[in-house]
Length: 125
Ligand SMILES: [Zn+2]
Image (tube, rainbow, N blue to C red; front, side):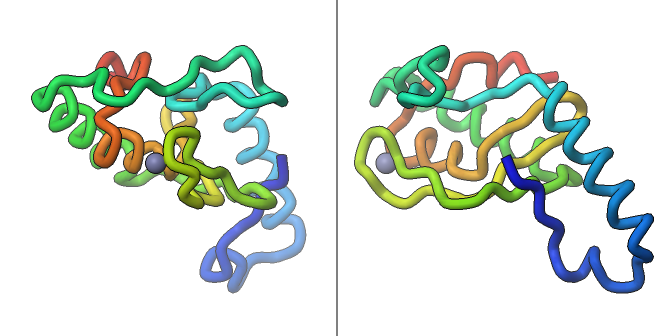
């Protein structure tokens, strides 16, 4: 995984500060609990998303959880993109990291458009 920093963060930082930031962010990502990651050949330990597995109440509740999580979370960019396992749509190039959890930006699409019940999302503190 490659960690990139947004341009606005890069401004006015010394080389050492940038390196420290990268190291800290990598460490935070490495130790984070992933939520909303799906099966792929490279990551066969994750489940496949299931369409319409969430009730409409659960959809609403999950979207609220995501909104709250995104607030103040840091973005970790990866090289390339992820595509939706259900419809093939290009679905994001970074993930959010906060409070020991990592959530891909594309998770909202699974909840909103496919009504997927995401393991662990509703239990997020
Ligand atoms: Zn989709």
